Image (cartoon, rainbow, N blue to C red; front, top):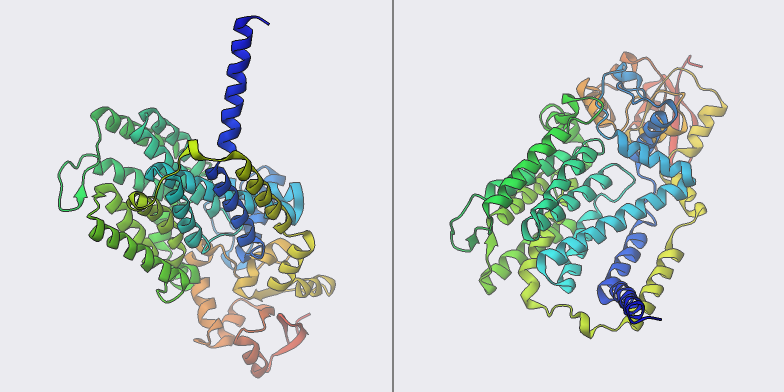
Length: 499
């Protein structure tokens, strides 16, 4: 072998060694731990009520090759026009089901959650310059993410939000060309979830703060040069143009504003849109993160960048008003806290790392993740416990006819398991908010109105309700309703004279 060939072979071997050493590193082990954490967190979170109507919508798009532009699930909406702002995510959800059924859906959820945590770990590590503190940041993201880890399009939206923050950081600190990944990101994002609008707000806020060049106490400006600023501005303009690459056009671009301004009932009555409770676990975590931020700044006399302050204010405002937005708060706050804590913790030193023990720990972590993944029996059991499976079978076998009034939490499952039976209400709150059905149903379900008024207005023939519903105790007292089915979860009432 010639000297040149030997040198090339040695170079290739050295490159492979470096790759393996990077994989079997301490940060690699921490990444494997995040994978295990994702699986353990999700193994009992399969049956989300909204998963089913997203799955059914994806099935319709998959099989018809057309995106429904009207509501096809509830008879109360009278086929109201709807904005398919999550259509691509719904197709991906159904694609996972096509590949593996319930197991495919769970694998989709585990993959998205692991990707979200790993991307968060990368963001916090790069932002803080400390792989150990970056892991703490990833744990903060995990804590607040537990409020929304489910098989829903929001998972893709939050992952893309972290990727946007990564691109913004890389473009500012390494090469401004990273900014030009933002337009394709937003072209994908606008078709997956409404959080794209939040992404635009964040990009605009960072661009705005790049013009600030003065200091007030601990608030300091970031170091921006004019070329980097100009390239970010251009990338954001192109990103706004990319939003029009959607099947609806202007209505899809402005859907998030429609949600905020024209769906007050949906925002006020759906639990996840309620204000954050500071006395529960995530509320206490919210206070702990804010307390840690201010404590570090006071004790260490740390500096806070203007854009960090703006993102913190945005995250605090969203989380305080809507508990589902605590997810966003975690994503925005974790990198900032990681940077402030970085000097307090010795960083990772690759030269002192030991690949062999890391490899063993990574292998053990992967085995734990594999054995922790729930089997089909487990997933089916979760569906049985969380959805009216037996009641739907009764409706099907007894061929119940006429209009059905269903419990709000059952609507999503019914769109999937009984597509031939239009529902009264389901989790697609934008539709039933616009026509007032959510408000009517909320007052009916909480006994704030005459029960007969709603039932007669919509000519309801039978009701499928959860056992804990107050109306289960009221309907028998009305005289016109009789129980025709009951189990440990659900009750079906039939109107006298209906068949």
